[in-house]
Length: 480
Ligand code: NAD
Image (cartoon, rainbow, N blue to C red; front, side, top):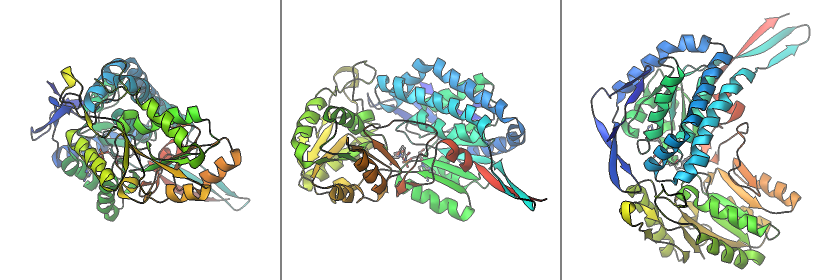
């Protein structure tokens, strides 16, 4: 049985109190490993190691730090199969998805920020003949990175890489539900020769380990991705300690299909944006609004394509839908399906737990589920379900689509499908979403700002935004 260790001061060590948590494989429902149940004493040791490593790490030329990060990226690429398999087993996602998305994107996070470090420039403000002001961007110091279970290595590295690139040292905690690839990353960091203490990966649950990271006075900034309720709690803890905070939280994203769209492309991508990773991507479009003239045609094709979404053992090559991440999460999603019935929705597809015979017969599988005839403002259409459940709703005007799309407390991403260029820009600008995709979904450019409006978060990750977040700006004014 795999027993994960903490990565502390360059070494793999057990938790100080010797306590472990069970790690369950979602596709089988069986315990297959153990992870450290770390507490504040482990976090304190990690902060001490990071503080000790900080002076040398921040003094290293950016190019040298970058070179190490690129080396880690190369090692992730070289270990693609092992990492993808571990991610699939730990999370329940199809191995095929982990191979093309999670792991390659984790490698590109390290590669992108490793090379970005050498291009990061600061501003100067010249008052001709009077003074020159220039900005110095110092690394914030020791920072905390806390990530969720849905895209484990992908989101973990999205935070760690920019922090390391600017010269911060990191105490990081992956989700206790999906710790495996973070552990494998520790091994790769040792192999790459990352100096001891620069990155420390401490495993454990939120209330003990995560809370200790947020509360520790030595940690100057927290980059967090997770649920909105956890984010609110975190903000309450961190605000009086005056820590910098970046919060990437939940979503309830609209997918707006106009009648003039390329229907085949809109349907195919909407199936993906509804059910990829079992609907457990914060950017999944769970509310599909379709302009009335093509509502029936879209519905028919969407339901037809759904039949191709084979539910199966995540390790099999042709599986499109794996297992949900845990029994608790499966039950939460099933409760929402019951709620959709109670609110008067018409079930068009799915709605039940699925059984995969053989090795996976006790796994947490759920049929891709589609409802219609639900009001835009009911709970099913307002609350984040974070599973393979979507609703279809017709609309008649741009204004109505925008009103419904903007009606939730969330504002992470939105997708719209149209061939009308002006409408695309006009509607995009009126959507209260941090990210808008037009005629595409999940398209990625690491230079762009990433994050949400309203209850979907505070701050932005990605590109310069991330590099700036992990630095403290200082203005130096020189009289001429
Ligand atoms: P979660 O909030 O339960 O947990 C996220 C992380 O926070 C975990 O590592 C957890 O251990 C830790 N944590 C929990 N309590 C804590 C505390 N008191 N102090 C410090 N850390 C604590 O979220 P989850 O269930 O793992 O992930 C699903 C959520 O993440 C969904 O709401 C989803 O929308 C959101 N998400 C957002 C984005 C984004 O970029 N906006 C991306 C992916 C997921």
